[in-house]
Amino acid sequence: MTAPIISGKQVSEEIRGNLRQEVESLVKQGLTPGLAVILVGEDPASQVYVRNKEKACHDLGYYSEVHRLPASTSQEELLALVEKLNQQADIHGILVQLPLPKHIDEKSVINAIAVEKDVDGFHPVNVGNLVIGDDSLLPCTPAGVIELIKRTGIEMSGKHAVVIGRSNIVGKPVSLLLQRENATVTMCHSRTANMKEITKQADILVVAIGRANFVDASYVKPGAVVIDVGMNRLDNGKLAGDVDFESVKEISGPITPVPGGVGPMTITMLMHNTLIAAKRLAGLA
Image 1 (cartoon, helix red, strand yellow):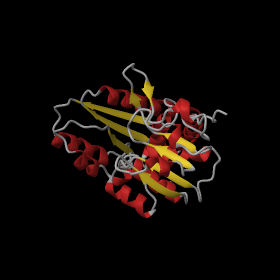
Image 2 (cartoon, helix red, strand yellow; image 1 turned 90 degrees about the vertical axis):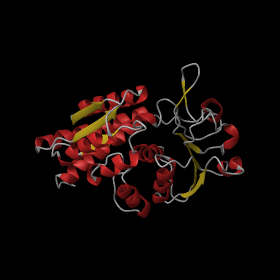
Image 3 (cartoon, helix red, strand yellow; image 1 turned 30 degrees about the vertical axis):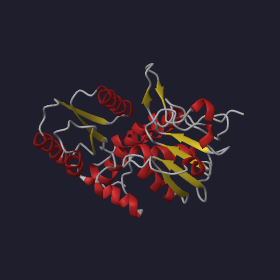
Image 4 (cartoon, helix red, strand yellow; image 1 turned 90 degrees about the horizontal axis):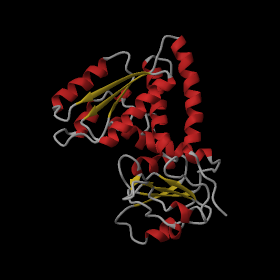
């Protein structure tokens, strides 16, 4: 029996519909959520992401600024722009598209963004609040993962969740968010011994390891929820996740496809964060 597909596209559209209604209400009160995106250099993937973020802002009625800077931009020039946006009243969220050119220190730039405008959820203060369970702007992709699991109707509390991958962007934060939902969490990574023995115990399996089709059916407990965060470009030009979708869907429970699973949720959660930041900065949250 083939598993039910978790459509990130459908869930994303539902959330955006709610955001659009709330933005319309805020605009009538004189508040338009504003997002500034900074792109340094000509990375093709980054250009696509930035265009998609700009389009989402326009579709939802946000104010949008996109600052496209040459790859030769100095760290000092970039930090000066970030500080200008920190002070700009009509900007409630600031996102610096990663990766940055090698001569720029990413940590310094992330740390320079005002905590209350850090809609990527990467600032150490927001990360620290996530770790201790305090309110914070959550990293977008992990927040999207949790939202997708919730939409399956499957209770996370008391379940064994296994996360493959320990990156600061996905693996670590998603494990913390799963713990918030009272799941028991095990993290696996490239040095994990007997990985299959661990993953086959998972009621919920989140895969973010960055290797195309790494997880096949032999890793998966029958009926488990499988969330594939991977996005890999194959030699034939097609996109593939970290999960071998065709084999795993035959034994898993609800599963996300690639594309159309976690991907659409990332920008939607960014829009959600920007709305939260706007309301907080305006004293409405």
